[in-house]
Length: 428
Image 1 (cartoon, rainbow, N blue to C red):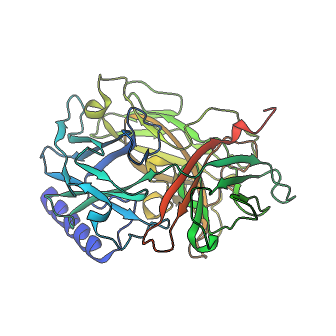
Image 2 (tube, rainbow, N blue to C red):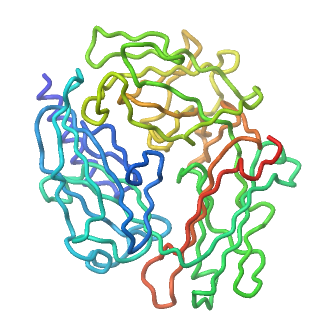
Image 3 (tube, helix red, strand yellow):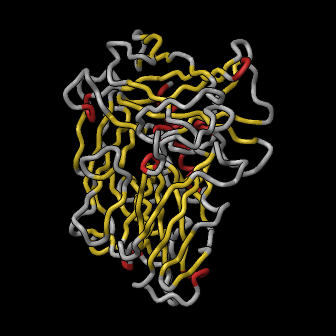
């Protein structure tokens, strides 16, 4: 029965891969879990490195089962909108175009059996040679069509200084619920004849691309200083501090866990219901801006000794009533920071709650609930109805500046900086 199920899943995977456009931050192969890409030695470090530096990224992932497989990786250079560039790989990779993942370990102690793979890159004989957006592609048997998963990573050539501030909006409709990002870039090092065509800026909130703000133009150009400070530009709903979950142990119950069913493999972890927070005042809690950390107090090394569990989330809407014309999603790095079918909760009319089960490795997690209008294609995510929006919330904003020369064939990432809103929210 299991062989038949796996064969069916594999056929579905191959059909989807053949017919779909390649997407960043997507898992294509069944059985892949626990993917984590970060700055070397810092699980909370977003995967961005400086061109030509010795900076490294660290990749970890697991494949369920006990069969060791031959995985490799490569990079795909993309433009600012994450569409692949029309360049040969040799134009943006110095050295080998593919590299094998030679470091792996069979899980031990954990009840769920898996093979843990890890790597550090870039390596000296395979280096990105251009600044920009890169899609990391991990695949089987040296065949890039047998794709396991993709992940975003950034390579920046810091030649454009960026000065950023976070403001409370003047707009009366947003003054208590939003945060406004404004910034100035210095383009002295660039040859700019047409700013609208040659420059692109992107602002991320908590490293999420799902609600990134793009396509804005400078309001003022004072010599080589371009000011992006339009009152309606780069205006983000502030949300609240993320909810948290401590899954470092399956032996003991942390504060958010109701009970654990240890009779099954994987274990079933039932969390206490999450209540609607849209009308609650903000809590000044330190969070991880939606990221997660692989960690385990039940073993020495969480990467190959940490266990997995089916974690059952419950969201209780106001009055136990479903949202009209809105779907509810769970968001965070653990869920790919995207609202789609895999992260959508199901309403249980008998209990009056929304429910979702995720397969998670032991660690510490941040998450939140969001809504999207299901009547509108590509509707924005909303925190107002589930978490509430308060301008005092702590958020990390990242400003990315892309440049293309008049004869250029790709967007180069020439500036990147991140800053936390708490730095500018005085008196909190």
